[in-house]
Every structure is written in C-alpha cells, then in structure tokens.
Image (cartoon, rainbow, N blue to C red; front, side, top):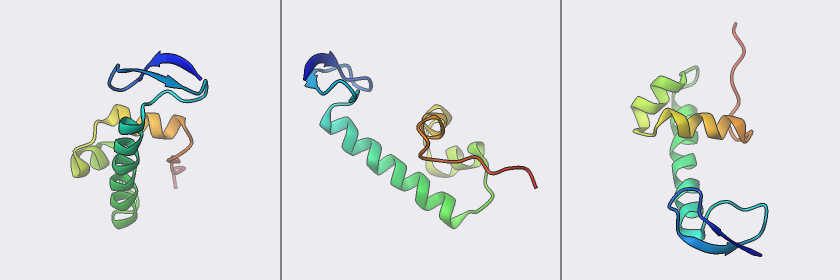
Length: 77
C-alpha cells in the first residue's frame, strides 16, 4: 500500500499500487458502468454520443471504459 490521491476525487488514501480510485469512487464507477451497460443492452448499435446523451454520462468516461477493455467498439458493418 502507498499513499496517493484518488484519481477521481483527489482524496489522499492508502491504496495498492494497481488501484487509482478510493473505495467511494470505485463504488460510484461501478454504478456508472452498470448504467452504461444497461443502456447499451437496451439500445444495441448505439454510439458514444447516444450513450452519453441517454445516460447523462460524459463521453470521456465512456472512452476510459473502452481503454480499460470494459467496453468494446463494434466494427463497421
């Protein structure tokens, strides 16, 4: 464990080296991801702008989920 600032809220916490979010922000991120996942499930074929508009979640958050491998881009048909 090492003392760092949470990437999302900036609070100083002791975290394992691979962790960047405090527990409160991690729980919030899980809820945000569930909203995105549910929206994509209900609206197949939607793009990032539609997801952001439909969920109220910033596109930057969606792009972070893609970089993390939690969301995948659909190939062009």
